[in-house]
Amino acid sequence: MRWIDVICGVASLLLLAGVSSADALEWPELPQKDGAAEIPAQEWPMRSGPRSVRILVHYPGGDITRVTADTGLMLTLHNWGGVDCVGTAAPTVLANDLNVVAICVNYLQSGPVDSIQGPEPYDFGYLQALDALRALWFVKDGLQQREIAFADDRCFCTGGSGGGNVTLMANKLAPRTFACVIDMCGMKKLSHDIAFAEAGGSDLDARWSRDPASANYLSSDAQELRFVGHPLHLAEMNRLGATAKILVVHGVKDTTCPYEDAQEMVSLMQSEHVDVEPHFVTEDMLDGTVFKSAGHSLGDRTQIVLQLAGAR
Image 1: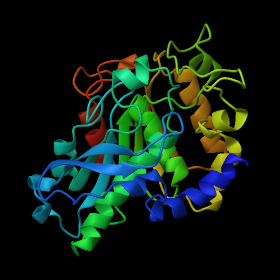
Image 2: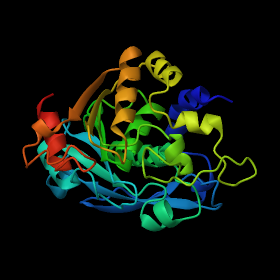
Image 3: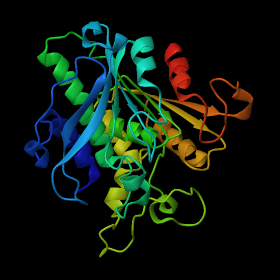
């Protein structure tokens, strides 16, 4: 099976909210006020058994009663090794300034123990993106069940570093879901140096193996799936009617998530006529407030999103 089949089928699977070990867990009620919920997730092959994901929901004004027909939905996703809303745009600010229900997701391998110290390879955006999309579905369904009107066409996603990677992968796997996604210094592909801790390039280590006998074996298909700029996958996204404008914010001196990978992805997207808008941060763009670094940290990731959103 090629991974284009996954892209074609994932939207239908998400509509079913996943028929898997997740069915063994009960779905919670959508919080009435800003708060957390633990939602069922599909099984992770690396660890068998039921799995759940903690999400944080933030409403405009902190209350579901403040949701109107103009209120959108927005995922804001933490960095590799982070939890909750770390390393991404602040959900309370997004909720109030952009009039969205902002959702943080503790997707697969959140926290340093599983993402950095664990024996399993780092998922690198596949099941993690499905966790984020499942959280989005949960909030959308919860509002619909209560017959609360909201702006279904105002659906957004953003994230920093690893959250930027999950943002890009969520848009890849569900290309007709978002109006706009904002990737802030995320990983663009599971390169050899990241997958296998090779010298040169990024210092990230995703702990995959080339050994087919290893539980951590990385097949060529699995690696291709995690290449956001894969030309065949971009063409398939277009064929399916991709809706999102993709904003790529990346520092030209970023070596953690290499700038060269961002250049490559943007170039491939432009070649395939994907609606992408690069914002490559150079030192002469630094203002000490919004943009503070041309490296991986970038600056104030909340204000970066607001600045870009204000330019729409």
